[in-house]
Image (tube, rainbow, N blue to C red; front, side):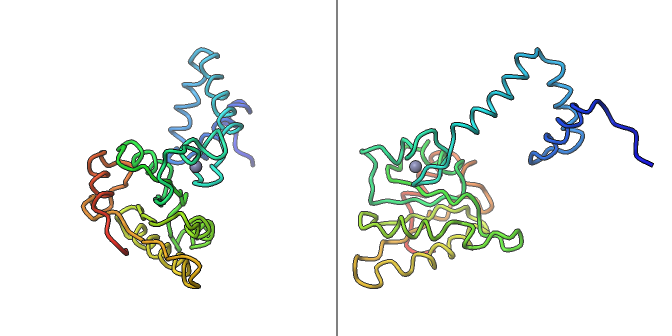
Amino acid sequence: MALDPVGPESLDALLLQLERLPGIGPRSAARLAHHLLRVPEVEALALADAIRTVRERIQPCSLCRAPSESAPCPTCAAPARDRSLLLVVEAPGDLNAVEATGAYRGLYFVLGARLSPLEGVDAQALGLDELSRRAAHAEVAEVVIATNPDLEGDGTALAIVEALRGIGASGEREAPRITRFARGLPTGGQIEHQNASAIADAFEGRRPGV
Ligand SMILES: [Zn+2]
């Protein structure tokens, strides 16, 4: 025998969508749904509009892969950026944290994930081919790896080094220097949650290899 319907069909549909969001279980979904029913309609619809607008306007930048309303993004398009430096981060939040320090004036590449074989994220899923193509540009003199200081971040850094190994091998250009953020950020701490001076120090103290 089928269970009794829990609520109106449209409310169930909203609950279903909310529960698909990360970190939202059935109880949180119910709380959010009832909040959206309680607030003025214009407020609830503003959320729906914001979701629609962001999905229509924002695409990954064709160069750095950070979310952007323009292609390429303003950072990649800015003539004042130092094109000899390419800094690799796991997530857009890390990019924002590095950018907020004001200490880095080069370009970026956002992996969008971290190496995690258990979760099915392999070297391919990280876009390392794309990174390799960007790093192969003659103007890139240094690739700075700024993956998080933890087990998966270390594994990801190794995979990056492996992917970039071939650049310069045939003598068409010098191999770019590969450096990594200095140790000093707390192990397991996400770069995006560190304060600006700690991130600036990790950049200034970057060292060769991983
Ligand atoms: Zn970009």
